[in-house]
Length: 547
Image (tube, rainbow, N blue to C red; front, side, top):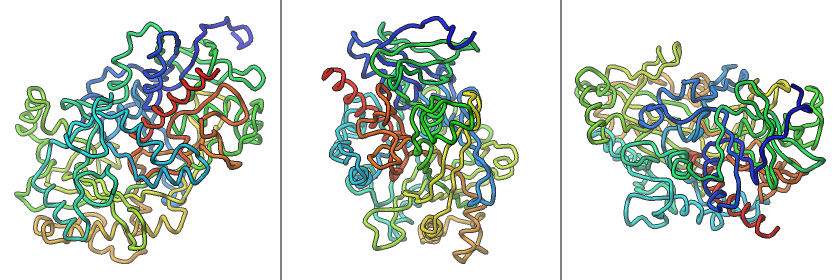
């Protein structure tokens, strides 16, 4: 059946495309008013897999096509022509259902820079209330945190003796102790906080969607692939999508909201005729708005791991996955919701300045007393822990200058867009990751940790010069899953949305997800994306009231 002959679908006040970190928040906040009808579309399925909810299950969901888009980048010149797998959530909850569970807001300065770039109303003072609105902080007495919000934030419970040694080694290497890296000052070393509740993952679906799924004014369609936004002139009027191959239309009285994330949202804009005119014409797509910024300004955190073999007898996570010890850990989880199965992607956070003249940290470390079997990781894409005790110290540059792009390869919505990450293209990025690796080694050589380490397995003691460290980074680094910026907010010619997150050049269309970030924030992106959606919800409701 052709698009023109499709029967008219249901009409809603708002249509949200993407039930990820942002889409779940929007669905919750907008349908709190029973008079507002919302359709929430999700290309993936329901979040029923136990591997989603058991925290350590992320090691499996990161490669599971049932809940994961499993994108692959184009060959990347800055990383020796390698192609990188980019996991993104394709399930209710989106990437918050498959991520490493780390709760990081970023630096206050990040948001003040957004405001300086023309994003009025997006400074730290503007954004902070929405972090608080979203949060239920379990640890009592923490200044700058809040309780009562949907998103549960808790402390790491599964600690190891070597973890305390790592923190002490960081202090000996000149990094201050910091028990709240989400506080006013991010610099320092301490334990991460996690989006975990009672030993189980607290995704955006668990926090925001599950409690309100019963609302009669909310319709959730899973396995619904958006094809394009429909327009009447310059006004967005609905969405064309498919379920099991059947084309369906749905109409929006007020707005269509894209919350597909930094890959899917620019792809859908381009498929809908909003993007670089030459690109759209080359694929036979009618140009609604010549918007050169759609898909540009792609930024991501590039992480490089350092792997250490610990001495025999030193306990790490590695041995806990073997034999009867593992059986005991499973039982501990089943009866107490504690132990190995509550493990997150990292235990220890460190935010460090690589140069004394910097105002704030420019490198983040993900540190875990565990190491992956490298052969299985690279040849079979399996995350299997080594038999011997180990430690991983993994730095990433917080504010990369290198930018890439997202571009459609055809007018077929089922074909993945091309991803060009352009890692390490900028000389500052190269310098920063080299310094990050050198600081990581200094931590490992500090007295509290040096006595526990048998050998540096990677990069190895033969790597000593800046050139060697950079070569190691190019050869072994990868994404740490934080793409942003491809439908950036601002007022310059490359901006895609204005500070109200309305797509420039049309009416009735917004983007609400990580793609609107004009610059990458200094940390993991899940909590900031939820903040963006909380703030956008108020904007949308205020616009409705004003109308």
